Image (cartoon, one colour):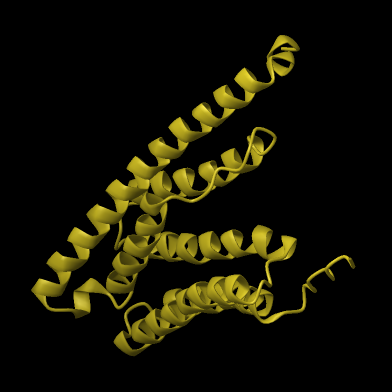
Length: 200
């Protein structure tokens, strides 16, 4: 029985991930260069949405055609967080979103990513439904804020803030859930491997 050939890093999902990384500085420039130009704000929103679409597409293709690689596992979540992180930071730079919201969200996002790496020796902490819903809600909220609330009707402003509040709440709550999951994963591992705990 022959060993299955290793999947090449040169595949469509990884190319989409790389494209998303390249789009981050482009998105940042379009958003921040002329923030008072409604047309530029809509272009920035379009760039953001296209980049988000590549995220949904690359994961689907990778799973369907078994094109999952270590490159994708590492860089796909980094590309996602770089994109949404830049959107949050950009809105705060423009004074359209309070910095405390951005800081808490970024600490949660990168903190949980670091936690995943730190507890990898105890097991894999998979993304749950809450985490996926959080990602969707963040994308919706950002897509509503990016055109510039000052250019939009009052009802848009209200809906955008509701979406942002929901995204913020989900970000914090799912972060706490991941902390509990990480602690549970570690406790289970140490219970099954008592010799590991005795070394501490």
